[in-house]
Image (cartoon, rainbow, N blue to C red; front, side, top):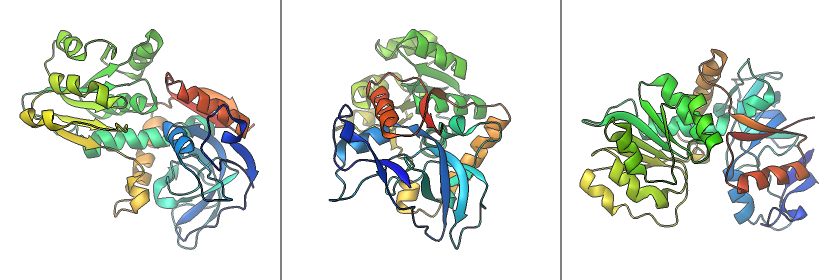
Length: 337
């Protein structure tokens, strides 16, 4: 089958950083489904792995953990899907990804794609939807109020893929006041269109802007990037006993100042369940099924914001370049021509 892979970490400007290659079709584990890939989304996780991982000698790593396609075969113990089903999923970071004609994925972390979406718009959803959902409801537990705090959620870096989903899920599934941070006029407008109640600028003083809203100190803060830079401001602006979540990878994070307010800190990594095959691994498939329902009933929408026709190495290098600029709004998706 045709695939796109890399065999050493290189700058994305180097044509060898992502290459068109031929590989055998993946072998199925008992709970796997074999999916013909019709569209893929590119995420910061793809960029991080490509830039830092060195595959074993004479092998290629295939990235891509956001995809939609058609089931072509199922493993011996698979029971959730049949050939011909249209599915979407994020996969597992310790397996070969979806930059390929076909990908094998455990059926427990896949779901039928939203009926109202084409493959491209569906492929934009899984990784960011899972990350946002698990952060909000499993880590921050935003349905459980913090005594004396404003029933509000601040999302730092809200115009990206994860933030875009977090805005929608929080607004549609809770009564929280959602405060989004975005720095450019177009990204601020994007956040408002997705349902944010207030938008502030993360290049300006965050506690001052939160105070100016006039609702008090928020119970919850979700930091999607540059957490090390913002942490001292987060500690200042959040209510005592509040809850903080992050998804980025600061090299060092001094959490001692959280103590006086009894703040809790929660890390979210959406690959944890498939990586460790946790007892609740099927929760991701159930989660994506609920997201599909919310899409089909018009409560939330895909965050696709840039589509590239053709899944090949040249187009994927372009997509990686777009993400490395760090100013993306929504998601970048590649689709079959």
